[in-house]
Amino acid sequence: MRTLPRTLPRNVLLALLTVYIVWGSTYFAIKLALQSFPPFLLMGTRFLVAGSLLFAWLKWRGTANPTRLQWRDAGIVGMMLLGGGMGLTAVGQQYVSSGMTAVFVACSPMIMSLCAGMFGVWPNKREWLGILSGFGGAVLLSGTGELSAQPIGMLALLGAVICWDLGSVLSQKKMHLAPGAMGFASEMLLGGAFLCLIGLVKGESFSAPITLSAFFAWSYLVVAGSLLAFTAYMYLLSKVTPALASSYAYVNPVIAVALGVLLAGEQLEPRAMLAMAIILSSVVLITLARKPSKNS
Image (cartoon, rainbow, N blue to C red):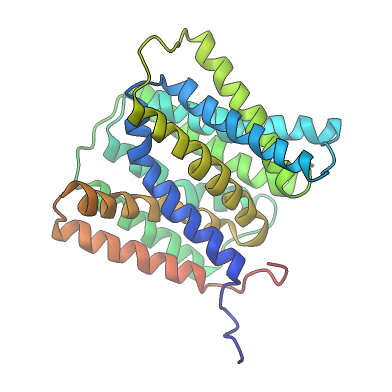
């Protein structure tokens, strides 16, 4: 049977669904884990453990170690994505409401597309339309909550988005990472170690006992949030346009809201329903804007 020319390959579709659903559910898992884990050590240990598990599995299969250059570039990308992206987000969220955080995160597809444009990969008109409409939908959705921020928090979140997006583009356009999953493992190892170092310098420690719910939430972040979703995200960066790879920034809040309705009995306002419809329409528009890579 002949497939439509713009149909996403199965691996790309699975990677997109993984990033959408898993990262959308990590909002709740992070909230649970923070009851026992300090923020930087929470993020650092989840990626350090995930990177170690993936690295060990690859070595068991006989995969070669990264070269010195590949380790260096993995460290740069890991520090930008995890240290800068997630570390500065942890700082910013102390001074910015969750609604305003969602607005900043929704800037990610625009900033990533601009970063990719520096290397000659500009979005086409349909992609720009999808990016802008998705941003509008995300702002509308976040507007159902409180929008407040202190200047230091806004600067931290802006820095987080820039670090994440620029690191994402550089990982594909400029840096020489180890091929395949070994590149992902080395990024998580070095980025996680960097986050742990920041946490220790800041004086973080595990002073409070770790509850069972916090441990299970942390385990979910290691396996699903890091091993599965982060690996899927890095795969997407190598296979699809930056606009589509970063569309998780629009979809994740939708997943988080849906889980809140299903699991916590939260009410879904008409405004939120309209915002979710706009966001999902924008993702469809971005998906159909151009053909995916033939090598996907």
